[in-house]
Image (cartoon, rainbow, N blue to C red; front, side, top):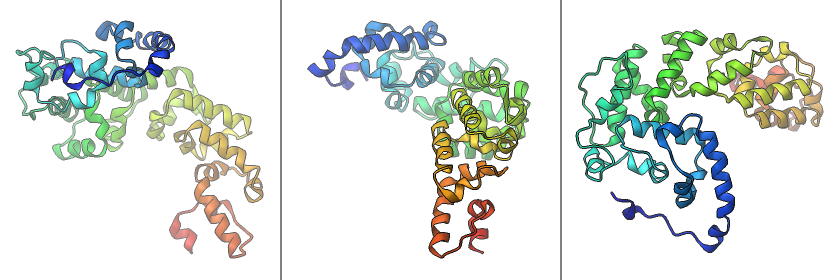
Length: 328
């Protein structure tokens, strides 16, 4: 599986004309990456110029995929490997060794296990592909760490497919933060399996920069509504700003913490629309107004329906209730 077998298309003259811009962008992006990847990956600007499409990959994805490759025994992580990650990890381990990506004496499962110091390595069956080897080691670790049954872990991995591609070091850090910093129980994490995919750096940034949500300590809100942990720090800060600008009280925020699971732009747009729709405008001071914002698309459809059948009194409860209650 040599690079020549999977050569990228030659850049067109138009693409070459923007190389100076790409180089500038490369400098910015590699500086962002250097905080957590330079020591491990050491991808040079020259290499990025040869593979400029790597700049289209999110830094957090570069970090994660690069760590997965290193954990599984790859000798080095290159821009080409990152660009072709999805294809590479599906290849047989024997093929990757034959082409010199992984040393012939390295077992990818044992290599992944070596990054999990507290877990005593033990031989476990794995498939032929690199991804299956990574998944086997990850599955064993999560069963041990979260006290999960084989059925539970298989269900989580099937439901949240991205976990299979998650670095075990990032998962280990995330679980440490979730359990020991935020105070979530193993049962809570098991019941909200998406938390395994949370990014530790984002969680720590949120705890550092977002002291409260709805007037309550952020850690407390995380324990009550763990889904918010998945929201980026920037989104939480912007959403808080928009709520304040539109005069939404902390009491109203506490009645609908799910507002923090939406994009900040969606929240801002929906808050602006409240004043443009007479029926919604009348509910702006309602203590549960954020439920209207959260379910705004459904509420608008219901409002149109009620107006069509000449029902003038549309309460917030009716607009945001379940379909079964609305039909009554």
